[in-house]
Length: 386
Image 1: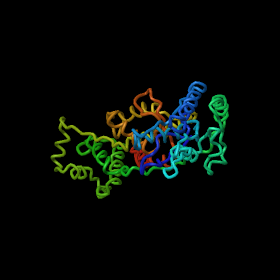
Image 2: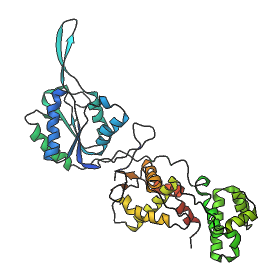
Image 3: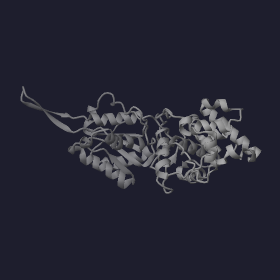
Image 4: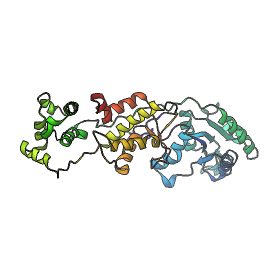
């Protein structure tokens, strides 16, 4: 499985494509000059009609300048294609000498062609290198000793078909596109995300008024919830061991003990259940993926749709943190966070018909993400729900 790397061209973006992920695609590098176009057209036609593969050729992008045009039309297809065909042939130009009033014919080498060729080499791509036979003696010295195939317009088709067959049968070179873990998001599990939840649980159980009626095992759970809260927010440490359930709620809600009791006894009391943060949803989803992977070791890849249904059901029936999760407002942003961190590849996930992949580029990084951002993981480490 190819691994994910930080984008070479931006400070903090991460690439959304895999090396060699499109096995039905050929990227073509060559001059955009009109005098060389018929040769490029032959290469495109062979890729499409002889091999039934998509042929990607970056046209003149001067009207679409910018990072997005470069990423979509050059960088990404070079990374993802199964084969890169490079035509080093250059158009002829006439250079006039103003002093002697003479013209000299020369080749106009394309900087872009050589740059893209070098980029493909750096990624250890399968590369087929071509040049017009009339220009073989004019190759730059630093590529003169490479395996360059010569051609003319007459033999290009037959020769190229044989060469492509050979190249596609070669094993993919060792991947040099090494995984570089992105920095973890800056807000791990902590008070800002869910310190309120254990208190909400106390309100739901009406522990202040009916503490004596609560079953012993439920008392243990409540105290464990307070213990978890104290870990999140050290200011609550003073309530540990003192039976200060009432006082902790007084302090939190900022009302007197009697007013709090009256409030809890009212049938009109509406408890506003806080919602999980996007990062916690992302962390809990990773935990579900981890469980799914353990239960299905035979699967070579994990699709979001295989995990999402079960995850969505469980988050709605969660004993500690139930909520009706909004697909657009919460789940999709959580997937966007996971994509930034290198876990999501391929098309955007929209519904159960999507083949969006979940990738684990580094087990250590994956485990650390769960430890920091999964609320379910944290609860599992501290207590077991009855």
